[in-house]
Structures are given as C-alpha cells and as structure tokens.
Length: 288
Image (cartoon, rainbow, N blue to C red; front, side, top):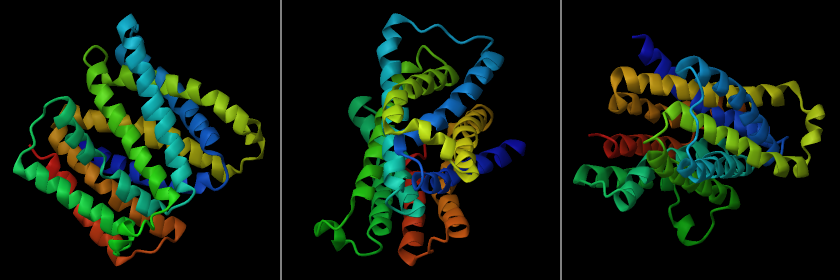
C-alpha cells in the first residue's frame, strides 16, 4: 500500500515541477536555474548511490561518450528548453505537451529498436497527440495551420525531443550501468556542462535570489529529481513497470491542478479535454 502512496506523491512532485519552474523562470535565467537545480540533485544522488550500491561504479571507456550525451540531452538541453519555455507559456500547457514523452519514446523505439507497434499503441499515439493539439491551441486546431503557435511552445517541444533522445540513449547505457548510477553520472555531467553558460548568464546574481527562488530550486532538485526518481524506480521494482508507469498519467493532472491553485492559471475546457485525451493515449500506448 505504501508504494502506491509513494507513486502518487511522485506524480504530484513531477506535476509540481512545472509550477516551480514557471515561478523560477520569471526571476532566474534558464542556465542558472538548471545549474543550481542539478547541484542540489548531484549532492543527494552521489550520497544515495554510495549508500545503496556501496560505491559509484567506474565508467568504462566505451561508456564515456554515451554518458556525456545523456548529460547533454537529459540535463543540459532538456532544462534549458524547460525553463525558457516556462518563462513564456503557462505551466499547465507545458505539462500537457511534455506528457507526450512516453508516446514519442514508444514511437521512436519502433524506429531505432525495432519494437512493434500494434493497433492499440497506434490508437494511443493518435489520441494523445490529438489531446495535446487541443490543449496547445486552446481548442482552435486551425491555429497550427495559421502558424499561431509561439516560441514558448516551440521550446517545450524541443524539451520533449531532448528527453526522447535521452531515454533512447539510456536504453543502451543501462545495459552496463544501473539506472541509479546512469542518472547520477548524467546529472553530474550535465551540471558541469551548465556551469560556464550559467556563469556567463550571471550566476553571481544568486546573492539576490529570493527565498521563494531558492525554495523552487531545492524543490526541483530534491523532490522533482531525486525523490521522484528513487520512488518511481522503487515502484518499478515492487509492482512492475506497467503498474508503476500508470502513475505518470497523473502528472499533467496534478500540474494543472497545482497551477490553478498556486499560480491562478485558468481551468479551461480545452485544457481538461486535452489532459484526458493525453492521459488515455499514454495509457494505451504503454499498455502491454
């Protein structure tokens, strides 16, 4: 019973990252926000990895490039586009777009790993993409044809693409490294890559950050990254990837509700319909 509570809280934590990211992006540059987020995450993950696995696994020569690419895509690029996008569009709309991650991973896995797409998965992909389009365009699908989507949506799409590449690379890397070690290494590499751009952006201005900014950074680093990852993989170990994966469907729902309660973002009909369709599509796509 406890693991189901943890998985539900994980979905809420991940939904909360959009609210924290939206708030932080208004005051802190994308490179600086991402750098501090993963400084927090790196400290906790190194400690946890040593405690759980007894040591940090030594990286083999052939693993160096894949781990560098993991840090570049899943940490550096993802968070750059995440914070740049959230500066421009609502947290709820961003959450709907990013909720399509599992769908696109399934789609690209058929191309690169020859995984089969059955009728159920294809239906799920169509339903999920339809839901995202409805939410993004606020119900006016013709907006896409008229080119009325903004830079914020574009950044979030790049954010999704970064995560898809990270996930596909992760399948290759995790053959030799545990998920915990892989994520720890990729986050440390990503943090190092973020340092110079953050410094050029004005990292020293951190002395002027508000208490709210520092809380959002800690939330993103600890709750949104470390605790969320650990509890999700604990769920996979205890009840299996299929059941644990179902809780991902609660992420956009919790993001929209938290954005409504904390940021005062409106609950529109197109947003609610989009959320339901995306959640249903993700479920069908990842159903065995």
